[in-house]
Length: 619
Image (cartoon, rainbow, N blue to C red; front, side, top):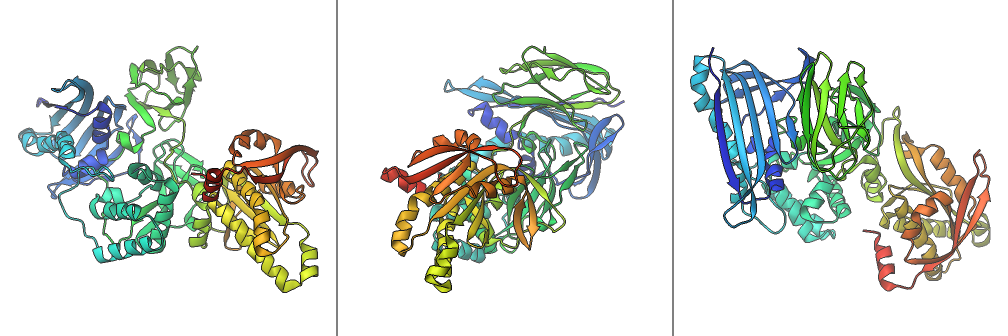
């Protein structure tokens, strides 16, 4: 029997451990830049009492390899490892790990020591001899990745990761022309330049499936401005948009479609072994890729399942059948939970539950465990006959996700992509959306007093006035119904800000237009259903009905809102003066009695800066 060949690599860097981990745990980009081969992965398999994926590749472009790739194990900012068992090729097994630890450097500051260990099990004498030639050089390249990062020129706009040495095929004439058009249309020239440089200089994996809010954070730019730029760039043919349907557990895209009409209400996750219902709030995200006419970016996979694939998972461990293991969890500040891949049985934190738990055929033996928030060990016993993979993960959703709820409730999206609608047979839930209804008081007499043509013009101009404030406060007009408007907002404070601005400005509007319009407003927040109604993206449900009924309680030049919502939103109205009163009423067609708050005599507070911020919309 041939002995294993073990190689140990050590390097120390004058970089904080968090940064080194960020670089080395991005295994997809690292493998790509290190010159490793692309890999085809199968869906997750649950055979031979363990979970794995079949992986196939060709080394040197000619030698076929096939292996079982088991789930990565890691503790965030400390260590990760991966096991591969080969059925084709000169190697029988590879176990690779990277450990990061604080270590002082020459200038007295704290740097990071990186220890890489590669353990090869050869399949034959030829394989034993080939390991130093074919197996070790890729490992050395991985260990040199941080050196490549340190050698990469830094600029003041955005940090760039090391890139592949090959040049990218870019139609620079088209890229520069569209960027010039975007700048001419009013987009900040520096923001446009950042997008141009990103598409021109960054790797294929970084220009495909881009998250606009992640780019905004990287560039230190306003999120909504970056999203607006991406939407306009898509309309001009610089980018293409897509919708990623995200698994609620592993939070990895399970399906990617180009239009909302291809979105389905139910999706299967092979990794988690579940079917899940999509919703606009979290499970459908808009992403952007460079248009293939601008740049031909290769959509290839170099690694699957590394720590950066699921950044919400701070620790992941495999536990063998009938084994008991102390698993390491890192320090944390957010709400966490313990989950088993595929089975999806969950344990939550509670201080009086102890630090040990048992997983059996029926799931956990208890529903809570005491997680040490400063990091430490949990004792977990797997009493089943199959290997399990434990994940320690944050419960909060990805803050960089541009969800369908956020995007479709913005006026810009509806203006640019009005044909983006769901399939007529699909209904997608939204857990929370704020719906605002308006109405013109006395509109019937308006037509009688000034004539149809003049009244229609005033009504149409008032729609533009409403849309202006709704759009500035990151909402969208869904439809007009007679002389009424239905609008939606991702955030209830945005909706109230829009309503306040409308009523605070109506006196000036009437003076400028020589009109005497009185607008009635009502709003409500709750779950809704997104549907295709007459080839438009529309919303239905109890929340919509309540918002319409609440608006009917408005008397004109006021806002009506539920008392529960007002308790949450009252801190956001500081730029305005108003009078408030409580109304107890039974809404027409609504069984429950709702306590309402009426805001009237609304004016700006007189603070010029506050008014300017209000006019620009909340940042």
